[in-house]
View 1 (cartoon, rainbow over the protein chains, first blue to last red):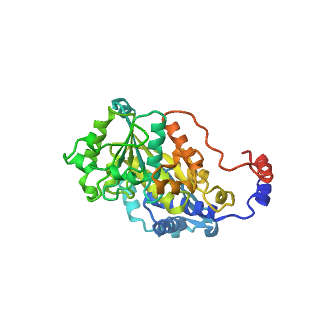
View 2 (cartoon, each protein chain N blue to C red; view 1 turned 120 degrees about the horizontal axis):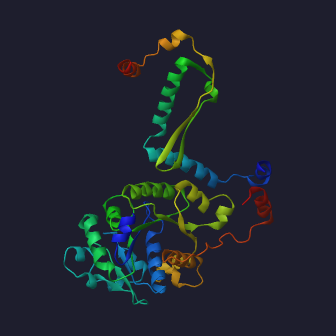
View 3 (spheres, rainbow over the protein chains, first blue to last red; view 1 turned 45 degrees about the vertical axis):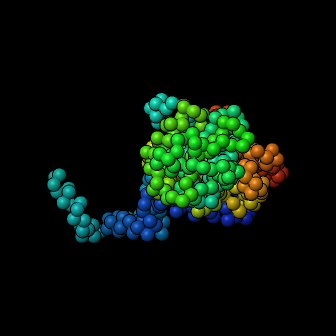
Length: 106
Length: 273
């Protein structure tokens, strides 16, 4: 079905479709008051943490916002990895807030 | 929302808003007022755009204004004195905005007071909100039982609509309903304009009406006779359909796309639409 549709129907993707894509993108950020730049910075930080423990396949990483409606947003992350980092890499991880927290509870 | 519904006596207050200016709020308010009146309802339309009065000229009542909304709020005139009767409908009245004052002359509480005083005397109160998200919009929103958001199938109008939808929900006046104005069906068909389905997907709000682009709307504004009084106008018919939906009739949406092409019908077989 998809093939037939793409063969005939979507031959020329008009500017209307571009408008829809651009609006979806900008409204996601408008609604959560998180501009794209800050979002990118957050993604980099999240990946940096994961990369201390796992060998991440950087090319296939997908971190995206998903919105069911304007009150509910989800951050969906797909982070493929190929193995774990050597133990000393992870031990080097400097995460003061987290370690203090877990120390208290322990 | 349910409790508000119960405590409400008399008229329903419907605020027409948009965020962005120039998308057709005033035109929509005028036409819905006329359509509701032609359906036998008692209607008061209020121009809440203090300082930029326009609903009067669109409705052809600009020469009859003596008192305005600010005169009422500040006690210089009784409500009745500021209500201008429409030329053709005995049960349609306009309360004009003040032209020489600013939006701070009226408070949200004033608007609640004015509409409460009117509720017993009519079936519908339509408020034409100013553009923007400041005081004027707050004034128009405060007394609303229902909010209609006018937008055009165009990126800036849709973005601004999303912004005020958020504010409407935050004020617990939501969810509101959409009027998509000035849809150019030929452009949609070519894929060069957002379709009504696209706007629905993006904003996630129910659509109460789709108004096709229609040159007769400009002629109507020029002459001060809202387009819904013109039986030959597609836009006029679409506004009338919205009014009928407001009073609770189940009116199917107009077919704006003409007959689908053979290729399109063929594609629908695969698409399940």
